[in-house]
Amino acid sequence: MVARLVIAAPASGSGKTTVATGLMAAFTSAGLTVSPHKAGPDYIDPGYHALATGRPGRNLDAYLCGTELIAPLFAHGAAGCDLAVVEGVMGLYDGAAGAGELASTAQIAKLLRAPVVLVVDASSQSRSVAALVHGFASWDPQMRIGGVILNKVASDRHEEMLREALEESGVPVLGVLRRIQRAATPSRHLGLVPVAERRADALASVDAMAELVREGCDLEALLGLARSAPSLGAEPWEAGAASGLTTSAPPVVAVAGGPAFTFSYAEHPELLTAAGADVVTFDPLRDEQLPDGTSGLVIGGGFPEVYAPELSANEALRKAVAGLASSGAPIAAECAGLLYLARSLDGAPMCGVLDAEARMSERLTLGYREAVAVSDSALAAAGTRLNGHEFHRTVVEPAAGPAPAWGMHRPERRVEGFVQQGVHASYLHTHWASQPGMALRFVERCTR
Image 1 (tube, helix red, strand yellow):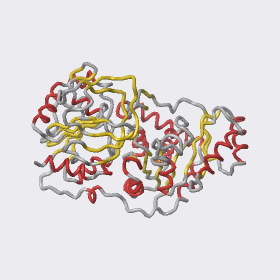
Image 2 (cartoon, rainbow, N blue to C red):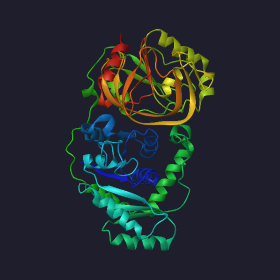
Image 3 (cartoon, rainbow, N blue to C red):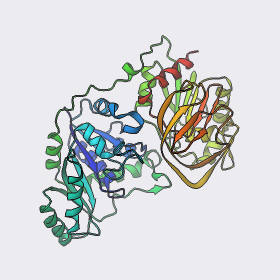
């Protein structure tokens, strides 16, 4: 039994991240062990959540993992904690396009049987806030909106008008936050700047969020609401049970990290470890060689376009990666990893593993995808079906090699990515908890 809250909003930009991260930090500083979670595929917010709580930020995505895994993944992350805080995605009822409530914050809240706190941007309204909150609270009778936090309130008089209006809605006001900038965090083309790139400033931002929440929110009432959640009744997900391989000599799997490669789900290294690997993180901006004994390489997403000159300047590591690829060792590269393996990125030489050029683009490619593995690879057998996610402002030409990685079925039909020797490189982000056989297959290939 873990006390839990879902922090939602009527729309993006209402202040969910500020409130959720501030609550995590405020309750942690009060002595509670807080489990941080993020609805949806976002990689950046969990970094701030981890900074606020000292625990891994974890994602809950019903599209990527399936509804049946949401409660077990939550129970796995929240085991032994006093409180879990789940930050929602977009507006409360917004989910995968054309799929009803699938992957919405509302669906996650229902799967977790968790009360919802609605964060409302009240900057341009007064009495209308009651109609807004009433609509969200009554739209789905299975939803339990346990309170409202009003954000961007201009003055004492503005707060008074909002509170008077909300008395008629029956939904209690659990917090009021004023219009101030001290908790602001910088953004760029894919959202907030990741923690790894601004750790000292990020710590200051998280501290400011915590102070803002402590000053403006009724923490005792919020904790009471969280403790009112009923028993979840879900067995925790276990990486070991999902994998099951043990080896006498664990192969070393190098995982790219550092400021340029910050996009990874917390369960991926857990699955690799459970499959028998010795997981070692390295920083392609700083380290000139791969970890000793590297048998396989995982390069996730991030912002290589921001660090292209520095990545290019590390010629020794680029040659080491190219040498590992030419040996046939398994390499799994997603999005940023795909760019790093190309011949060049915005004209800067990269690893040259793939016969492709990468460049920045003005077009944002964003959305869920249904995919099938076109070619046998170190990650998946041909014909394997899964759901993934794309999120980038870059283009790779050509988009696919002679042996493509994935065939996309929704929202458009196309092939994408590269499979050659042991390399699997693609723009598609995947959550391996939905296909634990991927980690097992990858580690098995590393032992050969």
